[in-house]
Amino acid sequence: MTEAERLAALETNLHKRIRMANDAAQKPLSADDITDIVKQVISSLTGEITAADLKFYAELEDLAQYIRNAKEEIAAIKPKDISSSHIPHATNELDAVVGATEEATNKIMDVCDVISSLAEQCPPEIKEQLISCTTRIFEACNFQDITGQRITKVVLTLKYIDTKIEAILKALGDEIHRNENAAETKKPDDLEKALLNGPQLPQNAIDQATIDRLMSGDNG
Amino acid sequence: MAVDMNMNILIVDDYKTMLRIIENLLKQLGFKNVFQATDGSMALRMLRENTYGLVISDWNMEPMTGLQLLKEIRADEKLKKIPFIMVTAESKVENVAAAKEAGVNNYIVKPFNAETLKQKISAVLGAF
Image (cartoon, rainbow over all chains, first blue to last red):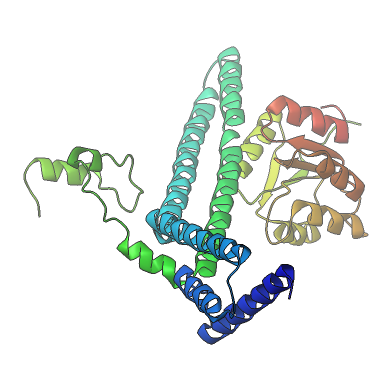
């Protein structure tokens, strides 16, 4: 048997064993599982192991190590948190931006309506100037629709990224979740830094009356 | 022929703030009878129940888009001659081409101002 034929047979044998193990496990194999299979195949070889066999084995081991490292790195960034926490949080923040600017826009337009009513009681040249001003304000309020649509696009992009992360996690199997749990525990944040969270979503925020009560020492 | 400032104008947008902006601008231009619909299917119902001299519609709405509304209007024997102006943030060449092919009379890209609105209405209905 030539060296090329031996390598081809070895490869076929490896593929077959990995496929069988995959079928038996009914989930993606871990890097350790694959390493074990490679070891079994190598140990089952009869006759002398050639330099090419050893090189092939070393390459496979490198590959297995590479996959193992990649999984650990992915686990370290806590990909599950991206889906369960970061992306929902980001989309909620963006929804709040749309809601707040919409509310502000409507308040601005309410005031414009009042100014337009008052303009009716003014001399013609003043009335004309006031109406011209309110028209320009209404024109400027167009921004709300455009920013709303742009933010919606960003939200859709985030949801797309979320589905892709889910797909990657599914493809990599349970090992990611196990590694994730074993990944470094979160370092305690600096207390002052942890207090800096920016504006709160409406449902999480407390109003000024509550703040006043807290400041006056009334916690009830 | 002078533009009838008392004609019914139907504005269609799923975004109520935008409806308010357009209605206000139309009233500033002197139009007295402005009606609102929040999507294409609601607009179509209103168009079949009353007479309108102009439709000003957004494109991106659900369940019926502005383009679908335009096609429905042009396919309806009783409605097909109503002037239709698209007011939208969709600003690609292919959007304008599709709207033109469907029979739009004019096309305004958001954000827009009162002067642009006046110019486009004048181009469709005549000077006012």
